[in-house]
Image (cartoon, rainbow, N blue to C red; front, top):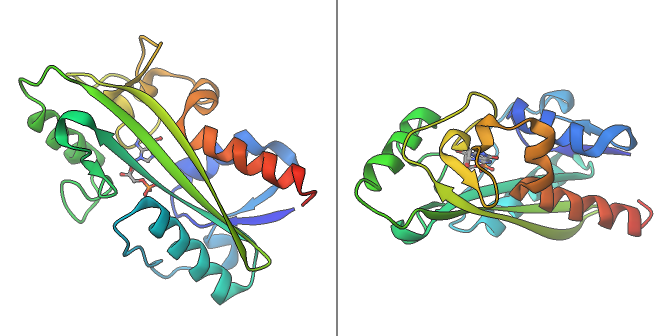
Length: 193
Ligand code: IMP
């Protein structure tokens, strides 16, 4: 089955293809010649995921899904949350985003945080949403080189490594996006899509 993943992030396409295997043909926005900026104006993950998938479905009439993810830090009252990508500025710089978080958490002992992903799937115009959460903590000094975004400062519960120190296959098993995608796959299987 062909499904467009509404993202320009090659890391996410790679993660997804490795979770989904050969049963699905995941197309990127580039593959369908979509080069415009996809609107993302909501102040919730649910709203942004919907806005992105509906935009592509309505314009290209192709089954698709979009995800939106936020890192919620307890001691920062849920920040950066839905603004995770642009936390330190419009240029979406991961290093600057991490540094801003680490600066704001100086001297704070409560390091609890979680990633939450919402996926909006549109099949033949009908929307279904899926959620995935992974709990963990924000460490003080970044560690690891794999992954992307906040991976070097996020250590999931039950592990002594950060996401950026893990094999992608391990991260996918426990991550927010991995969990949401597994629900998406179960849905596609259960509905014989
Ligand atoms: P998005 O809206 O899903 O693209 O994600 C929003 C922000 O969260 C981006 O800045 C990403 O860097 C960050 N993010 C999303 N997923 C992950 C992840 O798996 N690890 C680390 N950071 C992530």
